[in-house]
Length: 267
Image (cartoon, rainbow, N blue to C red; front, side, top):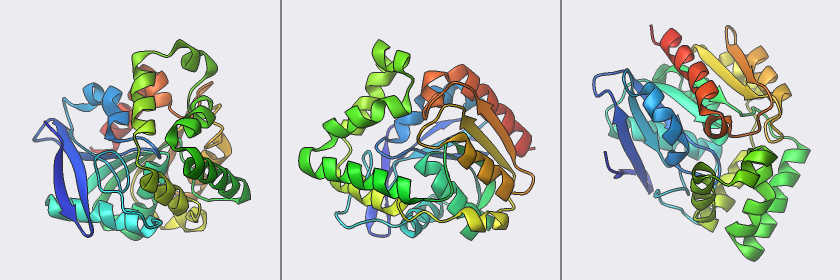
């Protein structure tokens, strides 16, 4: 289906549906500086059974990009508001990086709306290094736009060999990144700099599947272990040797873990 837009609070949220129209709804949230298309390589692995709702969160893709700094609370309200407008009571949530942060927040504060959580290559707590990392990128964006930040980011997201190969999937991610509105990137990074969910993870009761990348410099494996330790009954699987976007670089391995987890949690 084509991209559609709905009014949620103060913004227009872009989203699209794929998959089985009669299946359980899986709502998928992307990473900073990307869009719903970060999940393109996952659609075929899920579409036979699940009804997939992919959306562009505040400031990204084709969703509105207000100029003010954003907050994690806004991201949660946007997600729940999207569910409300679309008439969705509960969803299986799949989020990567910032999308995983939003998922944690929903599990903590809106647990009655979440059937399960799949948290991919994400973290639960900001720290001084992370805040400095955000500040550095914000400075570069303000001075030179999105292109120079891509050069700072690409080898954090992908292995060197993948970057050097520059295949079509790599270029799709790059294109989404450089077209991200500067206000959206500044607002989104400001929100995650204040991330503080680690001490609240015990409130999450939804079945949770955690997918980590063993060589991820953005969300190191220790951060995934913290989430695993904080959420009772959660499952953690590590894809060794991968950086931040294992779902794009090694989709077959990633999809097998994703699908098995969703199938188990949707019984």
